Amino acid sequence: MVKCGKLITFEGPEGSGKSTQIKLLANYLSGAGCEVVVTREPGGTPLAEHFREILKHHHTQEKIHPSTELFLFEAGRAQNVNEVIKPALAAGKIVLCDRFTDSTIAYQGYARGQDLHMLETLNRLALNGVEIALTILLDLPPEVGFARAARRVETQNSFDRMESETLAFHHKVRSGFLALAAQYPERIKVFNAEQPMEQLAAAIAREAADVVGI
Ligand code: TMP
Image 1 (cartoon, rainbow, N blue to C red):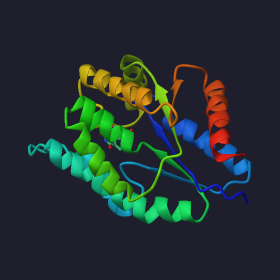
Image 2: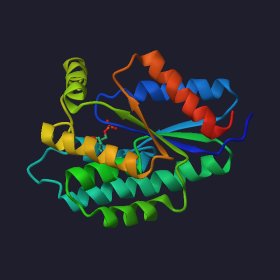
Image 3: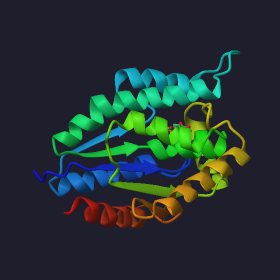
């Protein structure tokens, strides 16, 4: 087994194909001899999955306050980092995380309007010293993402709480992600999520191989 010990995060809008690409990259890295752990946010541990359920599907009259939403995302992250991500990295495994700290900056910061410096501080607290080696940003116009998500909704359940936000909200999310990519060009690599799945997977694998050193 190759000792890799790197955290790779996947970011992007609804319908950008993150789950498929994470599976493909996990297969590729395992094939190259790395031990791979796949996790997600919100979620990743039983407790954090409870928070996920609230964050995605809370639909009573009592609205979730934006600060409550933020704390739940960060609480789940602290749990996932300390229970799953840190131990896996310490054991030399590669961790692939479906969404992470950049989602907080894009959704709670750029789209909900919360103070970016405050969000960075909270992210740092939740990270507990963990560093992201590479972020794969799957970029897609919100209209295309919505159309893809709507096709999924036809066969599964309804749009979740965040997906039900307006198109304008999702445009702000996209701008947020692109602003982050411009701010951290070494870490965040942007991929056009509209290209064919195999082509995209090959491009992501090349980038990951470089960072992991395989
Ligand atoms: P998903 O895992 O199905 O993409 O759903 C997670 C939703 O939560 C998605 O709409 C993005 C949102 N989110 C935030 O708003 N802030 C965060 O910090 C994270 C991790 C996700």
